[in-house]
Image (cartoon, rainbow, N blue to C red; front, top):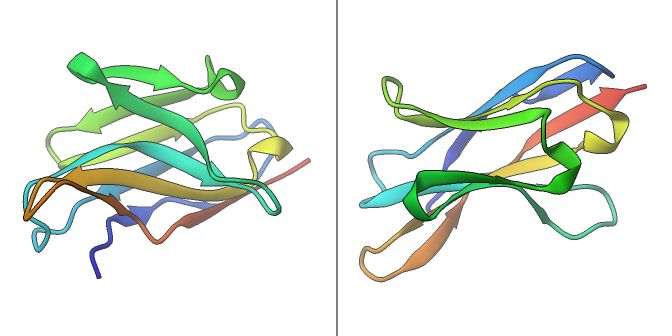
Length: 118
């Protein structure tokens, strides 16, 4: 099973920061990581931030101004810097990518838990 590798989740207090990282294993060919999603208990998975055409960042309204999506070209990771965390940010966060080998398909990570206590 193809899985992206996520790290950086944890338990923090409201107002604190976390940074999530996502890397693509070399075993997955032609993969590009494009963004982060999250799923809170009892809710559907939703977009947090992703790269759109021209590698421009796009953010959910609820995280604009607090979260930053960026590529670390040295470590070859896609990171989500999360500042001023709120209790409503509590969720399992998933990174998403896609590969065109052998045909176009989406690839997800296993998920990393982010818990923000108020």
